[in-house]
Length: 513
Ligand SMILES: C[S@@+](CC[C@H](N)C(=O)[O-])C[C@H]1O[C@@H](n2cnc3c(N)ncnc32)[C@H](O)[C@@H]1O
Image (cartoon, rainbow, N blue to C red; front, side):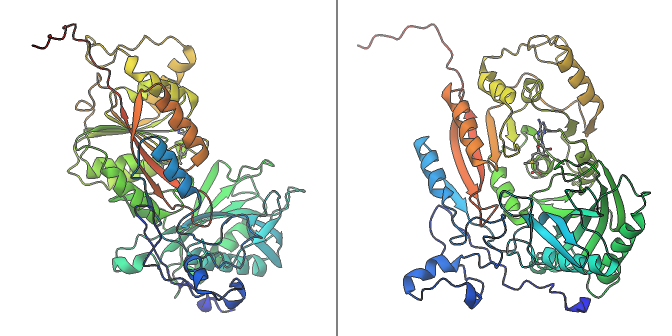
């Protein structure tokens, strides 16, 4: 196959259908369904479910999607709506977002043989890899890049990884699409996204014996679809080195091989740099919708703590759009730091507040991150909030914050635990401060707003109940976003307000009359 015939255009139109508040879509037109995939019915009543049907040939063999119909409204939306209603929030909204071609970031296993590589996801409950060349969730250019990779593996005799033997060259590939291209009209950017390819190579480093093959594969991709080719599909090629026999996809060593080093995306009103080693949201457009909704709940000039921050996209987006007095981002993965630093450099120069990023574990000494901020944003992994953070949030109202002589620290019980002191010291050393530290936050203030962004519905429900049971917080708003169409997962944005204790005045009520 000639490379110039690779499908860079989506086989189906990219459609967004928006539903808010919870109701059926009215404007979506479906992708043309391959006849063989249509359910055996022609009745008019079947039309609504087909309107938003997945129509993917890999459905059922691949574990990526679990639901074929009504992509615009996962069943869990009803449950979420009822859950929030039971907690007093009856105006839960759900944004259906883009239904096909939404995944801009995919990690795919590479198995099989050089002449017949399998590039895809594991079959449910097994380690058998299913090839998914026509995945309907992937941005179409991820599928195009996968086809090019497959061709390279065959031509260059690259050995896919053999899990049982621990042998082979290529273990996984991460494909991430950037739609940041200011040379194109805005309406064309998504469709013309370019792919950053990260090859997870089964060797310790770039000097290992199979590194010639790695370079040959990288050059193959670049020669055929890099910036000098007619088909500029590949943004860059990276290598990650991993020899461990566990299930962890990435090793610690990353090398940029070809193409642009920096990968930019425009979300939440800012330009954001994302190295392949940093966490990035898979559904870029839906994330942008969520960020724009989130902005509404943060007052201008607020002090914000962004916990589980990754490269700090939420915090930086708030710093730029809400002119925050201070923003501190807390993240456990040190690899996210360079992306944060590059993104800060692109913020408008007019931003005057203090911005910092801390390489720290939020579960250790969480109170120290909460005090001094007006708004806390948490965006934990699927397992939800760390117990120590929930405890700190639940008891925060009872912490007495007295003015200290230096005015620089709160009077929360003097810390003596050595591991906490060590973590504080380490986090201090590994932090990045931008802007004026002196105008930062009011060390006496306690947060009044908690914004919880969740990708794990079950853990969210537990955390939500835990926050509400002792009445330290009340739920004010909740919104859902279709981050993962084809699955039963949704992303939730929930806004909590801290219940302020009523002061006892000591005055007796005057008797009437
Ligand atoms: C769902 S991601 C969100 C990242 C970021 N908010 C974004 O949207 O790009 C969760 C992040 O939490 C980080 N994380 C996990 N456990 C953590 C912990 N105990 N302390 C701090 N960060 C943690 C992960 O490394 C990951 O970057």
